[in-house]
Image 1: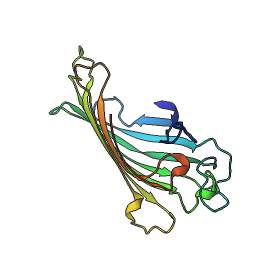
Image 2: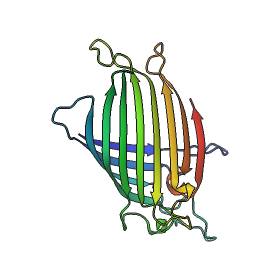
Image 3: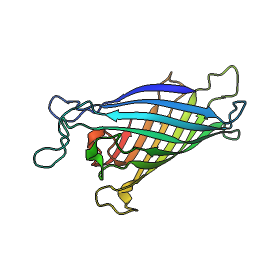
Image 4: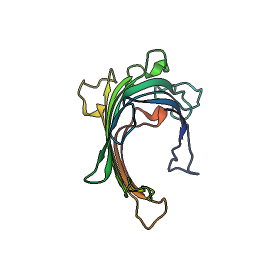
Length: 214
């Protein structure tokens, strides 16, 4: 299966007029290959994708004082991610379980040179997800999720400023819990927690800790 995703990420700043600056443009092409001849609830899939991440700016990366130009500085990188996705159906809890482990590589020459030594070009991601389904095996049910749980860890390799090899800042953690009440149509509530480097293009050098409830 091949999927093309024209992703755009926006962040609104809590300033006068609530501006949105330098959006993240993240188009990506993903390929999934099922290692089993006959697809089933429990299977193994190879996963690969090519991603472009930029902010659509053309200004200098640094200001005259040596600080990063967050307003108009050019940020751009291209990377490959590949790995394995394992799918399993837990009949006891009537839940789908997913585990993935992938490696992300930003090849030399495929990102702006200013990122060298400051931005991790090799990353290891591990994720685990559980989706509790409503009679998902019944032909007369839609299989709407009642809740979902997802956790993800990422470790950043390579030279990043003066960080040590096992600096805690190299570890990114995220956790999301979503709940879908049966009395609501396609509406759910979620709690999301993230800690790690800022994922919003040129703001990557900042450490981000946040919790979202909706």
